[in-house]
Length: 395
Image (cartoon, rainbow, N blue to C red; front, side, top):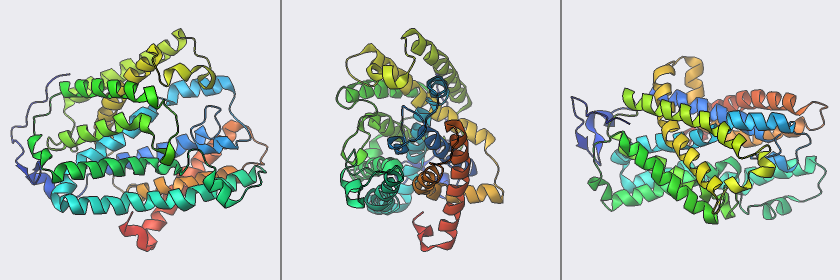
C-alpha cells in the first residue's frame, strides 16, 4: 500500500490528538448511513442463520426446518466473509470517533457515558430480554422448562445474544479511557501510512491464530465473550484511533481505498478456491480444523480473516463516504433508529420465528419473511423508542 501524504493544511492536534477543526463537528451523514446499512445487514443475516444447520443465531437450537445442505454451502461462501468485515467496520468506526469524544468529555466522563450507553442495554439484554425470548422459543418447540431454567441452563452461561458486541466494545472503550488517563495517547501521534494497515493485518492474523489455540472460533465462554474475535475487535479499534487524526472519518485516502479494494477482491477470489481444494463440502461437518489449533487450515483462516477485517473495513468506509450521501426523512429516521434497531432485533426476530414455526413453508420462504419484516420492524420500533420514550437520551 502506498503512503498517504499529509494534507497541505496539516491538522493541528489539540485535546488528545484530535484535529481542532474536527472538535466542532457533530456528525457525518455518510457514516450514520453506513451504520444503519450495516445494522440492517446484521439483522437480515441473523434471520438467515436461524435456518442454517451451521447456526450462528440461537434459534438454531429449536429450528423446525433448515435450508438444504447445498444451498447452505453456497450461501456460506457468498455471505460468510461479510461477518468479518461488518464487525471490524463497527470497531474501526468506533475508534475513529473515540478521540473526538475523549477530547470533549475526558476519561472519566467518557467511561461513564460508555457504561450507560453500552453497559445498561447489555445488562438488560443479559438478565431479561434474551433469556425471556429464548424461553419463549424453547416453549414454542414443546420443551417444558421454566424461565429460571432457561436462564441458568443456557450455554454459555450469562449469554446476551447479539449484545455481546456491546459488551466487548464496552471493555475496549474502558481500556482506551484508562490508556488515555495515563497519558499514553500523547505519545502516539505518527503520520498514518498505508503500510501500517499491512502490519495491523499481520498482527491481527498472528494474535487470532494464537488466541484460537485456546479459544477456537465459535467456542463459547461465560458471558459469551467471543474471545476468539478479540484480536480483530481490539486491533480495528486501535487502527481507528490512529486514523482519526488524519481525517479518515471524512475521506479515506484514494490510494488506500484502491489498495484495500484490491486486497478484498483477491481475498474473496481465493477463499472459495482454498475451500474447494481442502475438500470442504459441509462447513458444519468439515470445518473444525479451520476454527483453531495447530492446523495450517486455522492459520489460513486467520490470514483470510485479517485481510478482510482490515482491508474490508477501510474499503467499506470509503464506499460509504462515496455512495451513502442521502439525508432525507427516511434516511434520517434510519440513522437515528439504527442503535435501537440493533438492540430490538433479538425480540423481533425471535417473535417472528416463533410465529412462523407452525407455518408449512420451506426454510427459504421463512428466511425471506423473517428477514424483510425483521429489518423493517426493528427500525420502525427503534424509531418509536428514540422519538417517543425517555430512552432517547440513552439510545
